[in-house]
Length: 167
DNA sequence: CCCTGATTCGC
DNA sequence: GCGAATCAGG
Figure 1 (cartoon, rainbow, N blue to C red):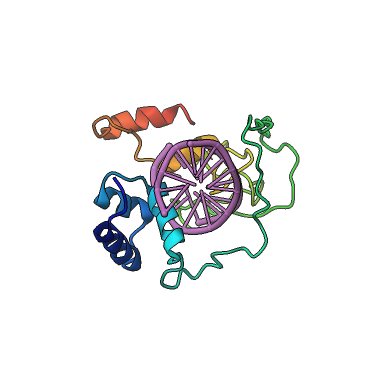
Figure 2: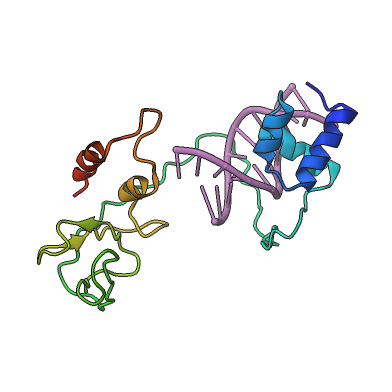
């Protein structure tokens, strides 16, 4: 499907309305979001209403060029729970009474996934290197996902069971 | 993982 | 001109 005058008008309209490229592509049909973005740029209407973001980092697109093999990022072994005590940075366990549950060993960039019974002396946090989010890559998925994809909703007990493996 | 726009370049 | 592939970021 090509860009007829009519489709271009729709594109302009929707883009101006603030719809995302993928949403516009879905609505138009027959095009991908890449096609939409490409067209948007060629039409010169890239900038929209106050993204509040720099939009262009000024200097950041040296263009990699080589289309061949992408280098696999070296994987780092998970950092074990700290044995020694680094600079204490008290963190309150969100579900407990204020002031009772604090963990002295949890640093700013350590996974904050709770492990064990918060009431117990053994209670701790995952503590591995946290990527984005307060969690490590493994727990991040569990923390931010609706538990199951595709399948039916998990019952409370099913959810609890699936979560147990992370404790 | 889901998503966003930006850019390049073979077609 | 087009848009897939890729990048960079949320």
